[in-house]
Structure formats: C-alpha cells, structure tokens
Image (cartoon, rainbow, N blue to C red; front, side, top):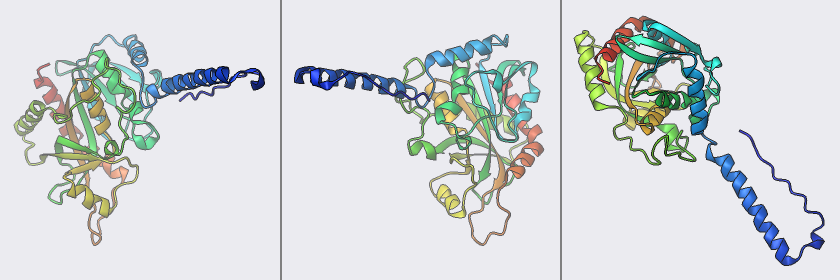
Length: 326
C-alpha cells in the first residue's frame, strides 16, 4: 500500500499571530485527515474502479460471458480439464490478481463451455498464509461478479473432524465457521462501496439451500451416497495443520471439517449477491487424540487424495452444473 507523508514548510512561526496559527493547525489537521481517509478507504480490498479495469483486461482476452464460476481447491484443478472450447488466462497476465504459490494450484482462469453452461473456472486460489490480505485473495470473486457470474461453486480440500468419516469422502457444505473473520480479518473490513454490496450482508443463507439439495440428489443419482456427506466447514489461517487440542476445539464449536480457504470467497460472493454451493473433499482425518499414532496431515496426502477422487469430483460437479437453472 502507498503511504503518505505530509510535509509543509511555513517558514518562521514567529510571523504568525495566535489566530493564524490556529487556522494553520486546523488546515493541516484537515489535510492529514483527508490523506488518512483516502489511504484507509481501500486498505483491505480493491476499489470498484480497479475491479472494473481488471474486468476490461480479462474481457479483451476471452469471448465468453460466464454466469457460473468454479473455484478449484488443492489437488482439484483437474476439474478445469472438463471445460471445452476454452480460453485460458494465466493469473500473471491479469493486473492485481493474486498469484498462488502452493503446489496443486495451477494459477489460471479457464473460460469455456461445460455441460451446456458458460463457465469461468479458477484453477488454483490464493490463501491468507501466503501473505495476502482477505481483500486481495477475494479479488477474483469481485471480478466474477462484475463479469456477470450469478452462481459460484467453491471446492476445497479439508481435514475430517469426525472419526466416522473416511479419507476420500465428499462433504456438501451447509455452513461455515470463519475463525479469521471472527477476529476481524474480513474482506469486507474498511470502506464499503454500495456498488459492490451492502454494508452489513446477512450470511444465514451463505450456502444456497436449493443448490445443496441439487448436489445431494445428484450424488445419489451417481451412486455416491456412501461417501457424500453434509456438514459445517471451519477455516483457520494456516499454513500449519491443527494441533490435537485445536482439533478438539474445532469439533466442540460444531465443525465437521477444517481447512485454510473458501470462507472469505463465500463472504464476498454473498456480499455481491452471488449464490454459493460449497463442496469439500476430505483428504485426511485430523489427529485429535494424544494416543493416536496416525501420521500427521501433510500436503502430499492432500494432493494424492485429490488425484484419486478426481474423476468422482469431476462427474459430480459437471452434472450439478448441467442441472443448474440460471
């Protein structure tokens, strides 16, 4: 962020009367306040004009006007392979776009056709633990909204909290717990531009109930009912995986799975009026017992589980998209 330093040369203060000195102090205070306000307005996000400029850059590189967006989580970039007649735009060709530094995140936008729908797919996302602000990692969702996206499917890799769940299970997200958001790290913090959304958006319907029903019915039609669940996703910042005590705490507050992404994107999507469907792939079962001798979570396991379950996730997501009523 640009920082401002106000330096004013007024010569010798001896030439100022007390009244003039008071006037000068008031003027300097107003100038400093104006600079501080300007600096603070979009300290945690991007302005409407900046987002609009990013959209123009993207529009010059694709012929598509998508109404559905998909965000691919760790190890799930293979979803992008389903897109036909695609236009691919690497993130480093898009101004202001956050660059993913994590293995398993390809780092590109894919525009095209998927089961009869015009989509834009993010093959890879950025995370807070990479050093970004919440407003920075959610810029792609802001861009999707201005491009005309009305429905967003977010996917992620997550650790299962329940011992009854298995690696490779798929969870339809009913709700989330945003630990970072509860401590003030929100993409909506700071100045609110009403062109982007309301000052105080409701999140009681963060995950669209009709889309949840559609996802569950689709899973059953595909014969996936034995490994498809519904539950609450909890997000922590990372990058360290959770300690046993943290896992027990997360379970006690009502979570069924835990990860390091998604929730900020959902907050911005709902702020923008976009409907959301969330799907987690359970890539490991967390260690919450000190006597548990299971090997701790690692990113290689996350990617391997994503690879093994890729075809099932592809079929599920593509079939859901085909059934969506825009």
